[in-house]
Each structure stands twice: as structure tokens, then as C-alpha cells.
Amino acid sequence: MASILQHIAPLARHWHLPTRAGVQERLRRWRLAHALHAMRKRRYFRLDIAETDDAYQVEAEMPGYDKQALMVEIDGNAVLIYAEGEMQDDAAARVAREPQYRYFSLPQAIDERTATAHYRHGMLELTLPKKTDGRGKYLAIR
Image 1 (cartoon, rainbow, N blue to C red):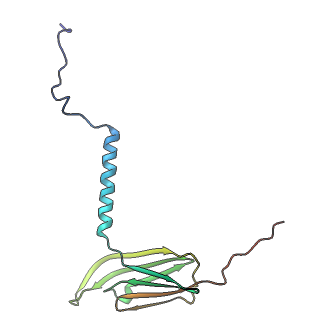
Image 2: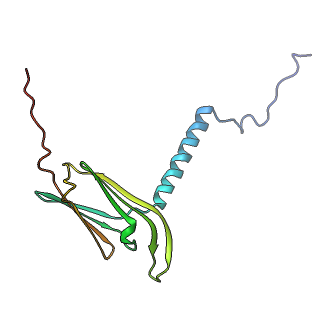
Image 3: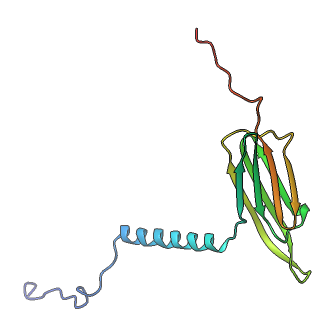
């Protein structure tokens, strides 16, 4: 009697379970798409960098922030511009805003002692002089 019975699966041709690798690939694509969507929603302020013989000129568009909400940190050749706090709206109302930052590194070290920053009309202007006394030193090979 056992030889007469057959295993019948009517939906086997139309329905299949995905493999473990397929599920992991779908999750990876979903996470990547979600991360890209979150990055698109986040706004970064525009930044322009110009180089002269003795300094870097940086201009950052940061409209609506108070001067106290801005911070610039210099460490060697790395620069961090950070803005947090409330932003002033055109109607003189305060609007909460998530922190924004830009981090970049420059080809040459910056002299922190003579660097200057000015914030006027929504533009942050940095003058970052190049460090001249921090040059490398040759070692004598014995």
C-alpha cells in the first residue's frame, strides 16, 4: 500500500521558501536603502575651501544660527565645524534643529594661534594660516 501513495504538493511549483542567503541579501538591501534615505533627509551646510600660499580660506553657509550655537575645532590639519541649538526663523520664532557638522582635513597643518573666525549674515568665514614651524626633520642614518 505504501508504494501506491504519492506525495503531492500542489503549490510546490508556485511557492518556495527563500534561502538564508536570499533573506540576508534582502535585509542588507533594505538597511542600505533605509540608511541612504536617512542621509538624504539630513541637511549639511554648504562649504567652500580656497587655498592661498600661506592660508586656507573657508566659507560655510549657516543661515539662522546664533553665534553662540557655533563651534570650530582645529586639531593639526583636521577641522570640525559644529552647529547645535535653536535656529531663528524669519518670523522671529525659535525652531529646534538637530545638530549639524562638517569635518574635513587639509593637506597641511594649521596654525591654531593665528586662525580667525567671523560669522556675519549667515556666513561663517574662517582664515586658517598654514603652520610653517611644524615641518618635518631629517634623521641622520648611522
